[in-house]
Image (cartoon, rainbow, N blue to C red; front, side, top):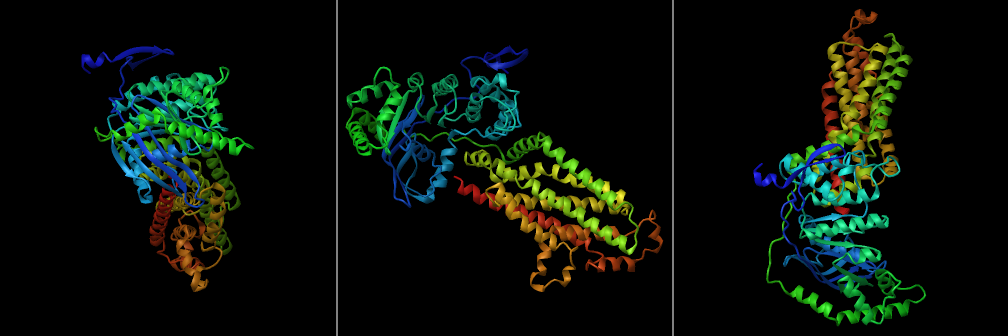
Length: 627
């Protein structure tokens, strides 16, 4: 580090911890490219009901300004915000244009352009949504470090510098080692800290354009003021910030650089908070001294129950007054001035291998820090293993004993397949909203998340099945040659993976945990029926016999049975009388060929990849519909 660079850092001791932080006035985020966002003639109508949501709305968002979209419920502010970001536009007919630095991204009104435009907006902006969605088992700094890996295409030193920078800028340093927490499950950081953490994640990408949806909702007056103060400070760095807000206090209202009021889908005013007070006084609606200006203005722009006609007439007069005012003239002049066209800055996401590693770390920590799930699965398998071992304790290899051992092998296969499939089914339903947000924000490729998540679940949902297998192996008295133990271990791992893939596929196909559980049950029952124990599959009707080849039960059970009776070791009294003919006689009861194990292992691999592919396709379709 050069002497000039060292001047930008200083040693700070806080909470008995010494660290290097950026000096006041310096930021590791880098330079900000000024961005002006213009929208002209925006109109939105629902396709089915033909209901008008926005009508000929135009406006400007300038660099270095904090702009608030305001209005009564149903005024159209959320619709306008969605239009500017090109999100949640399914079933809407649109008109108008949106430009960034004079460069038109696309012309609205073309449904096929929605996804393309949304990707362009995501690549140049950040979006802090109203609902905080995090991985609650991680600490604040851990979460930001993983976000930095996904958002910053640079070295680990650059990422850590930016994380430390935003921790201080967003006043999150004191809670850096606190776990974020899960609402209703695990206590974590406060609501104000969670809101600031949302902005911190977006700031890591150093966006020139930032959207925020209701940033003060659910916060007390002190926290709300703190959040707006931070947003205003972010805007001072040259960024363009647009947010929706609902009835801010008088003090908060004056903190905005400019406000836009919407009423019945039309623009009722655009200008500074101070100008809004004078404008509504000119319209004959002077704000009483004891009233909050924003609340009074929104009240006058709302349709009052029982006074619909009077309210609509009042709104119409206010809108007409605005359309003939100097405020609109100034906006239109800025919209027409496109003399300086510059390409908007594009934020580059991390390389695909960095995405996979970062997401694997996040998912792995989340699994590791869910001790209830881990311990419950391990305890369950230990108890089942002990119970099954005692039930079939040292079974003799008599005809009846052989039948009992085969039943035990089917129970073993069925237990780790069933429990694994059901335990893993809920993984996506719990985090779909977070993944959808991050994917549409352009943080990572969907396949990178899918691979990382699947890999992170493998250790937990593989080792528990092995625990039960190894317990019962010696308690029952199964054959213990090295090759048989290794093959039984491999079959158990592959069957667990097939069950995991099935559970993941079900979770990706169905949108709720309840529907996933209900719809998966008949499939598992069907797979179990074709497992080979309840009936010789070769005797089933030819029209449905092929279903056995879709069942992981079938190949897991066949593999364990063939592996068990392929060789009887010398520890068993019957070993001297065990012949190839006797082995084939046992296998013939199920129509299992002696060399079936060389088919069972590849079949389990194919089933696993098949279900993983189905799961990814279902997830991709759901993500496309979620924009």
